[in-house]
Image (tube, helix red, strand yellow):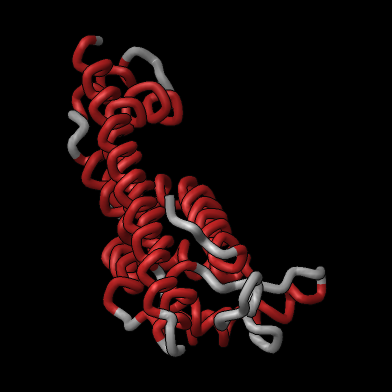
Length: 230
């Protein structure tokens, strides 16, 4: 077992918390956006699709800087939030926001492809039997696309675990507050004798990512077997 220091355990715990919060907060908006892009045609659809995927194209540092401009204490959104006691810049919650934005395109893309793979004739049949659009989505579309939705959530979680550029630009690298695993590894590589601790944290990061991917594959296969049997 790896013998981590208290500071290293803190970075691991913070990364897990940030990644979990970012993923959970993205699920609702991600699923709604994926369904909208997969099932609806409307003016501005291409623009929405482009905005969703913009974090994949922009350098992460640029995304982090834009977040700092918008959500910093003097930013248009950050100043309003500060009035009600919500501060995101240089806080772990800001790291969760940055990770959510960076992982959002991966989540939406996986969910969208999964929803598009659902046979629309099944949805139409449910509609002709009197089911409302919401009922069709909850009872037909979502169950059939659930393996892909889980894959999208895991991709977003993995992206959040490895996010560095946007996070360090928006919330800095404060030990115990915003120093996630990638930030801690980067810091250790910059100091003499930090190679050993950096390697330990790298192995922990790999172990967490592999565990998440295996869990996703297990759940997707299990759901696929249940749907096939049904």
